[in-house]
Each structure stands twice: as C-alpha cells, then as structure tokens.
Image 1: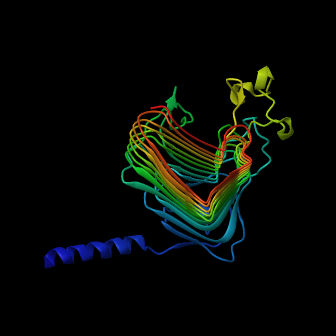
Image 2 (image 1 turned 45 degrees about the vertical axis):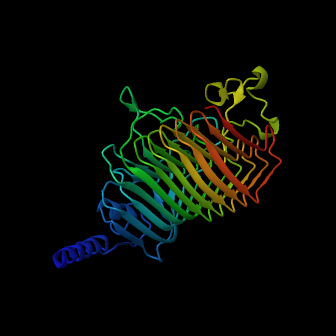
Image 3 (image 1 turned 60 degrees about the vertical axis):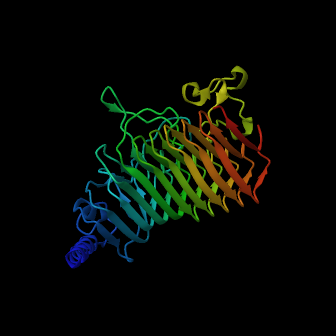
Length: 380
C-alpha cells in the first residue's frame, strides 16, 4: 500500500511539473519574429502569456499551433486582427486549447449569400486517431467579423476527390471521426457579426462523427448577428449531446440568405426567384437558421439544462433540437425567453423510437411569427 501511494504521488508530481512549464512571453504585436505570438506558437510552447504593454496584434496569415500538448494562451485584453480573409488561429493536431482575455477580429464587410469568404476565428481540427476528450476553454474571449464560423471544432473527416468538404448536419450528416469526445466550456464569450461570407457559417460550430460525446457548457455569453446558427452542435455517431447554458443570449442570427430584410421572406416563396437559388432555396422555402441548433443522429441522446437565457429575433427557430435514432431528448428550460423568432420559439423533434421529456418553468414564449410558439413532435 505504501509503495502504491508513493508511486501515485510521484506521478502527480511529474504531471504537475510537466503542465507547469515556464511560460513563453509575447512582448510585441508583430506578425512574426522574436517576441511575437507566431514565434511562441511555432516553438510549441504550451503556456503563452501576452504582456500587458503589448498592443493589438495584426497578422498577415493564420496563426498555427501544430503541437499535441495542451495549449494555454493568456491575453491582457488585446485583439488579434486579421489583415485579410483567413482563419486567425488554427490548432491542427487536436490539442486541448484554453484562451483567456483575448479578442479575434476579421476584416468584416461580408454581405451574405455570395460565398466570398473562408476565414474562421478559432479552428480546432481533431485528427481521426485522437482519443479521450478534446477540451476547448474560452474565458473573456470575443470573435467578430470573420467570413465563416466564429469558433469551430471539427472531429469530422469528409473527402471528395481528395478535396476536404464541409460535413453535413448531425441528422444524416456524412463523414467519420475519432473516438474522442469534445468538451467546450465558454464563459463571458461574445461572438458577433460572423458567418456572412459563406453559407451555413455559425457562431460556434462543433462537429462530432465518432463514438464520443459533445459536452457544451456556456455561461454569461452572447451570440448575435451570425449568418447561420448562433450555436450549432452536430453529433452523428453513438455519443450524446449534453448542454448546460446559463445567462446567455442568442439574437438576430440566421439571416445569411436574406437579400433584403424588408422583403418579408419573399424570395423562394411561390416561385419567386432568389439570386442564390442553389444555396438559399430549399423546396420553395428560404433557408434560414436558428439561435441554437442541435442535431443528433445515432444511438445517443440530447440532454440539456438551459436557465436565464434568451433567443430573440432569430430568422428561424429560437431553440431547435432534433434527435434521429433510438436516443431521447431530455431537457429543462427555466426562466427562458423565446421572442420574435421567425419560426417556433422552442422546437424539439424526435424522429425515431426515442422519447421527449421536457420541463419548462417560468418561461416566456411570445411573438414568434410563422408557426407555433412551441412544438414538440415525435415520429417514432
């Protein structure tokens, strides 16, 4: 027993020593060179601190971290500014990522429905051999003005003639993934004015196609004016989608395909033309998006607890949770407002043998426009 305790203690000491490696300091806002953030990332340092006297960091190409060790970037209120349409930060080997007190800003100026942009804010690419849990921790972080997803974690490999293409939604979405789960923890995060340079570009997008779960915890955050969904979680394998949301706002999302908001959704309806029919018209209806969208396919379930949060003036549903397979939808809404959304304020849909078990307490669901205020449907 004493030997076991000694080995355990030594193991913990080694782990602590490894995780507490001396930080590398960013001392200037240059695009590259000694003291820059790019140089720190290239060194494979796992602890990076940006000094308080560093002003905004203007970059000319994507910042890349190719290491496998957990990466922790601590800012001091700076903004990383892209000088062109490209992804600001790319984690290429599925490493755990923690960022605090830092903003990411693209070039902006994207108008929607023109497919003229590709840049993301923060991108974590999960390799197919990854195991365990991929962690994304954002605290006091903002992402704005990028063409594509604001924050994207992709555990989905889908190729077509050697070209990587976008994974579809969890409900019937193609692609393969690792066995790893993805856990995202967001606190005081703001994502706004993103997703207007590419179709189906979300504020936060998590794609999981293997056996792992999606675990999504968000507090005191906001997702607004996003071209597609404010948040989209797509799970296409055996795992669950588990959500805990508190004091979070989802507002004015989903309008990428709107040519003119004053047209009252006229394009595509009744044969009316749309300048981007191949993207934006789906069986005679304009393809718009939600405040918060969950798609789960396979054996897993959707489980959520949402409190003191709002979905307001989104262009499709406020909360849209769909489960396809034998799993269930089990959730609780407490003190939630769904108001002014163009479709249902709250919609939960079970397509197969699973059940829907929903608790609503002290919620306000009003002035949602086209259909029911709330819809709970089971086809199994």
